[in-house]
Image 1 (cartoon, rainbow, N blue to C red):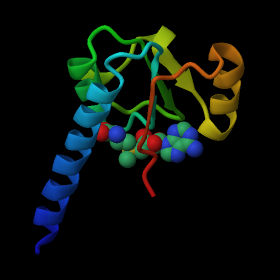
Image 2: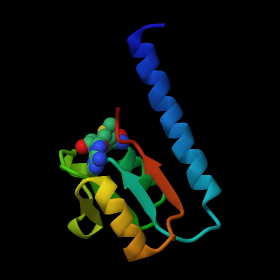
Image 3: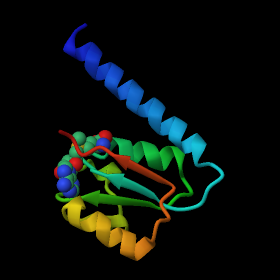
Length: 104
Ligand SMILES: C[S@@+](CC[C@H](N)C(=O)[O-])C[C@H]1O[C@@H](n2cnc3c(N)ncnc32)[C@H](O)[C@@H]1O
């Protein structure tokens, strides 16, 4: 299996997991937390499949595609080791879905 095959499989799996998670939370309330914005591909997908959800994005340095950059009030800048505990104090244990893609 080539590296290209592996990359494609990883992306297909990630999309399938996000789509399944979106179905699982359909009947529950609460925001979505996206940990790691990166290029913004998964954030963009979450916006597509969960158009009525508040999606808070945690990232230490924004470098996303302009189409996939959250508005300032939905962006939580800094190291998640600090900002995630802060978010618990701010939101309580309310998140319906946490997607963590922080890389290696
Ligand atoms: C693999 S990328 C995310 C890719 C994204 N899901 C996408 O589809 O484009 C990982 C991101 O997590 C961020 N990140 C990694 N560790 C972090 C940390 N401790 N706190 C905040 N952001 C972090 C990096 O800056 C990077 O932008």
